[in-house]
Length: 140
Image (cartoon, rainbow, N blue to C red; front, side, top):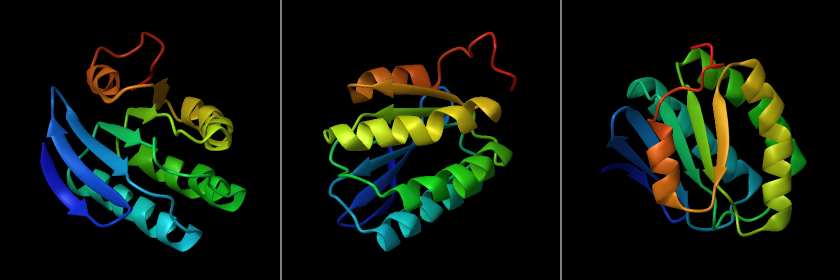
């Protein structure tokens, strides 16, 4: 595991655990502007390191606003798909509202773009799945 970027709110790690994986570990709630900057950094790292899977450790990430989730759905998810991402694992937020909003915002566009998406309660399960065999229905 290699630390690629860190600040008080999120750290990005690179893993080569059978595939190239980016793990984003949120350590705090962030405002909208910083959230978008961090997500754009993650997208840049996906492109730079030819990432196959993204693990989002959202356990400490507080509630997100709907405008940010709409932006992720409209702008970031399609960009991730064209960058070659094939799996997104989310370790669910402790915030119940955040869990519901993320699920609602991400599920449909990820399916349409052939990115597999799953929720996890722990990091190890997410890491195991991130580079495991593709689902038979996955188009990539």
